[in-house]
Length: 246
Image (cartoon, rainbow, N blue to C red):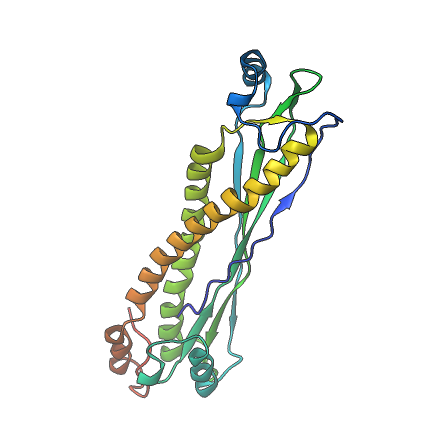
């Protein structure tokens, strides 16, 4: 059973390496820039770059809790089936992301206007997955092995979620924002980028995360059906009936 997916936004703005005292309005669009300057920028500015990396989680197994404690813990996360029987296993999974910007190439088109194309470095960071199996079940026992197999179905869904998330972010972020060029002074461009980070980039990332989470939730629900739970009553000691056998 996967309990929750915690999103942690840790955006950082770094590497702004331009210096000028001249001013151009915040968010200067290409249409506001002389055509010759825009053409020069497009020829010289750095190529689009969107990098998305993944720091995968380790899986930690624990028998810290007994059945009663796992059942109570499950209630805290609104498990819809917890009142139907005893909870024998839980899987916890957390992940977040960091967005870092850099500007390795800055073109001085005139003494008044510069242009930059941000490079995006997005990291998906997964904290450890914790797989809990009730302490009543001895390792390598039939019950333990059955619960273990069930919980690792959730682990596999979580790991697939992360890989799909990285792939989707890389493709869609590149398509949506990879070609943007900013024109202006150091201060005006920096202000524009800070605004776009809060109003465009981070909301876009969060929307993709929510979409991928929804898809993963559907897969978890297919694992955690009452029909699957009831199968446990036909294996091992027949004492418990809340985890599936495969």
